[in-house]
Length: 325
Image 1 (tube, rainbow, N blue to C red):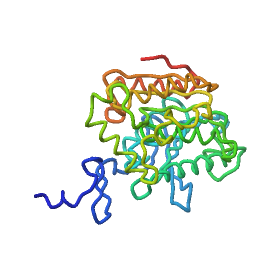
Image 2 (cartoon, rainbow, N blue to C red):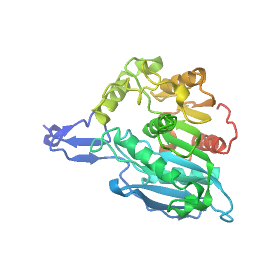
Image 3 (cartoon, helix red, strand yellow):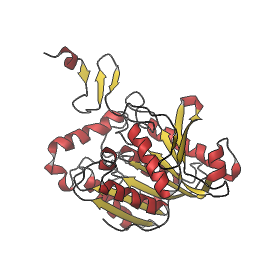
């Protein structure tokens, strides 16, 4: 008998995380940490800033090559994926990906480092992300301490984006921003949801064809959000019964990206269809990448389809309307 195996909880459910019976957390994926830098291939510069000292929350900021400080840029606020329990903006694949997107789209970016479950269960990830947005909005009209935001950002062109759990966060931030009492002074122009992690208690579409994959996703939300473990919680099932109407979404346009082989695919389509019909006063489009699986663009960033996806995201950030793949 493998005695180490006997000491583990949740490792079969979450293959990138081991929770030992003594409470020790062992992360097995996206644990690398690359420093900020100037990238000579893209002419993108990055740096790390502490944005919420009380919680030790930081972010990685990105800036493309600029001629002068009079050139104001759209701002992308990005939330990384990883099931709410692994990864960070400092992992190589996210640093590389955001660097490429910033270069292609010619935007500034803030990649948020929210705290992770299970040590910091949801809703802490939402609370950290909301605090990051309020920190960003504090720089409107030349206020705040961060010179990159004050000197280079056009705050009329703020976008939220994320992949998987990060896309879930982006959606929930846009819903919170729709609350007039939320205290967010910056307006969100658009939201891009890349392979969003949405779920629900009832099986839809092709989910029944992958019972093993479905079982893993079924167990994820209760693990990261033990205080409200129902998979129909509106934060993870935004189109379920009892969820607030998507018409409250506080942005003018939404881009939903799904992948054909992703078990989350049909949830993305359902979100798109619901948003399109709910009376929301905005424009929503969807892109489906054929023959690819969940966050393929991070696993294989140099492939043609990953390049196509980043082109579409860059077009979205620059007000061009992407067409279906």
